[in-house]
Image (tube, rainbow, N blue to C red; front, side, top):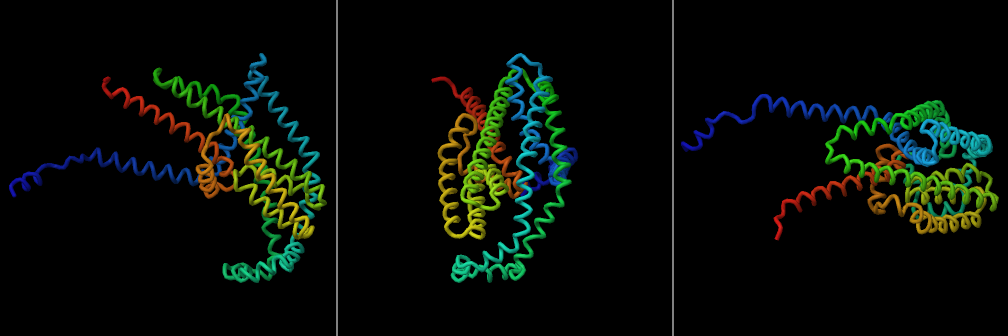
Length: 359
């Protein structure tokens, strides 16, 4: 009893300075979380600009190896990129917009025809899809007419998209011009014995990210070209915007082509009949095998080595956080985290090995 009283009589070991430090740290964490939520759009735009800058910097480095100055190499790369985008805009976008406008105008009719088709009636008879939609609050009687307003609301966001594009463009230019110098100054502040390790990690991240973006651009181009050509051959009326959308679907690993293929198959069923829809379904099955077993391993085998399960998990999480842009950022972020984790484990093994006495 005396021992208890003596221990209770000791003054507290928690000083006022410690309490203030803990409270300030907790407040700082909360403020950082709020800042990240409020600045989510800015962070997304910065992440997109960083990815584009990393991809373009590989081309800049290639030109610099050909004895061009960095400023001239940056100007040449940006001018080439703008020329390619302008050519695509002049050749592809007008026709794609015309077909897209036609698709928007015919959307109510296509939805009504699909709801009245034998295929949907048989599925609805077994699974009662319309009844489930009504229970979820969908107005199935006005489903066709209600398909148009969301598209119109999306069109009203063109000015926001243009503003975001200009912002990303300026970010990319400034990152290419001032980014390497800023990175070198940051590395110069590290301890000399750790600087080589930091440079090695950044080099791995740079190589993996640049290779992933180059490969992703190649795969998206192959997808868009093959799909547009196939849909044009079978006579689908909206082949150009649908083919471009299919190409962009490859930006989302695994899930993107499956969702795009299912949607295009249903659209073909509504516009071209069952046989054309069957041909489209077979095409997407074959293309899925080509992309998953040939293109992706061939393109990414030397850059990104992320387990498919981890990739799918990262895609689902980042889509929930940032939508389609999150899906694009998921694989580079996961690859970066994997590189950093491996380096941390290597440091831990080195420390444990140093502590083990020699036999």
